[in-house]
Structures are given as C-alpha cells and as structure tokens.
Length: 412
Image (tube, rainbow, N blue to C red; front, top):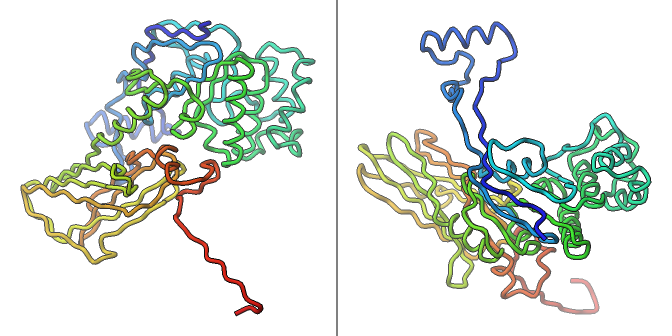
C-alpha cells in the first residue's frame, strides 16, 4: 500500500534582507547602497550579498515519488541539495510552492535538534505534548512512557526543563519519542550525527525494527553511507532540487560515489585555477589517490606549496599532509598545466564519507583555501573483504596489526 505519494513537488524561497539590529546601522547600509558604495559594516574579506535581495531560489523542483508501507527509503545528496526541505514539506513544517503530497497515517519527525519540543517544559511534559500532537490519549502515552525514557537514557533528567539538556540528550529523547509513539511514518534527518556512536547504532536498530517488525514507514536522510546501506532497501539521490536517481540502495550508493569522484572543485585566482578530486585505488591496495590539477595563467609562481587535511563526517582530521614536511617547493610557469598526484599508502579508512581541506601558499603567504570537498566514500564492502571484524566497533581507521606473545618466569 502506498503511504506517501509526491507529485511534481516544488519549493522556492525568495531571498530577503535582514536588518542589522539598530536603526543607525540600517540607515548607514541604506545610504551606502543608495550611492553605489559597499556595505560599511562588512568585515574585511566578506562578500556583500545585498544585491541578491529578491532573487528566487528553488530548493526542490518537480520531485515525484512514492513510498510503500513498511519501506525504509534512504535520501542522500550533497549539502544544500534539498533533502531537509523535502522532509519539512512531508512533515508540514513548511508548505510547497507547487505540487501535491498525499500521506496516509500519522507522521513523527526528527528534523533538527529541538524540533517539536518546548524548551520551558520538562522531558516528561514534552513526551505527553508530542503524544497529544499525534492525537494520542494520555493513557496511550503513559503505556509507552517507561519504554521511551529507558531508550533515551535521560531518566535522571526527565523532570528537568529540556532547555537545560545538552544537544546529545535532546536528540536521544527526541528520537525515543518519535520512534516509540504510535505514528505510521517516521522521518529522520541527519540529527543522529549529534549522538554518540553507541546511541547511533541503537537508533539504526530501532528504525529497522519499526519498519520490519511493526510495518511502519521510515524516510532516512543521512550522509553516512554505511548506515544507508545497512538500513534502506531503496535510496533516492537528490541533486540541486531534483531526484536524479531512485534505485536499490547498492546501485544508488555506487552512482553517488562516482558522482563524488568525478566532481571538480575549483579554486580560481588571478594567478591560477586549481581543480581537485580524490578516490580509492581499484587495485585492492586501498591507497587513497588525491589529484590536484593546476592551470597557470599569465604569470609565474615561485615556491608553490600546499597543505591538505582529510576529515571524516564529524569534522575530525584523519590525515594531514604538508609539502614542506619533505621540503618540497615548486616553481610554476605561466600558461602551463600541472597535475600533482598524491598517493596515501593504505590508510585503511572505516566506512563513511571523507572530505578534503586544501591550503595553497608560497613563501609570501596564503594564496587560497578550499574546504569540505567531498573526497571519497568508503563503504562497508570495501573494508570488510579482508577483515574478520564487526564494522560497528571500528574507529576512524582499521589498522593492520599482529600480536606476539612471549612468556617467562620474571618481568624483563
């Protein structure tokens, strides 16, 4: 049975101008613009976006799909692609600009930290409030209450106003409420990244349970490809507001990986244009290849150097490399093309998406900076083929190691 039907769904936003907070500053900005001058309140290096006021931005455009009862549908895509906007429309947090959404059943959603909770109310009061919003009686919520509190692990603070909760406590209770109250559809955005690894695993298990054992429907938005692959039967890739692919999860992840690998990220300056990309080797060495392509313009560049950092989804630096570690400097000639290929020898990364930060400089100073470039996506299959391990227990890397045991009658 179809429980969610979306037809030609579109959502647009019109960019507006937010005041500075004081009348005198607002007047100064207006007077500068009236004379064609830059915003006097901008910090050095900031860009003035005031000329974009009134511009129409399409977060979603002509999106259509259906979801069946008991299905776990994954939704993936880069930041700003429209994933969260889609869930907000399905949750009726915001209205579509055009198109139609038909939903059969009650929806419980976990879209961002704090959604659906009143900060002045206690955890206990918010549980009953959320139940009432879903149309449940007090008796129905009471039957689920102990199970919700036990799952969330915030029993000591259940009678404390949630405004005093940490973000992790907030998410644990919010997910427990959404997953245990009697809704037919559960919508979960990337907020689970706030919780610790143990609780994330617990949440993934619960989402699988509510779908497979309780027959409820789950839409799961995440950048964690390992979680998507483990949980979802079908996955949609959203790209610039469109669904570019709706397919079985393994096919969708493979397509998304190719898209990440083939995407060019460009740093353009008066001296050069830099393009970067990265991928895992296909020769079973698990080496990481990072390519930096440089197109020089009409001048030379002396003492060219760069630093780079590879980060995981939580922003933790896994690898940092500097060309001056090995005392390398390069003199680049005008109108020449250079390709730097870095091979990071078998870092044995755990499943997940990894990002690249790139710093360009020479002896004079920094020339440019690109951050959060999607670099590569490591799936469980890439890691598990040679290891007899539980992937859920991994750290950031999977080191190769050996153990030697010696025995004696005394300590040396």
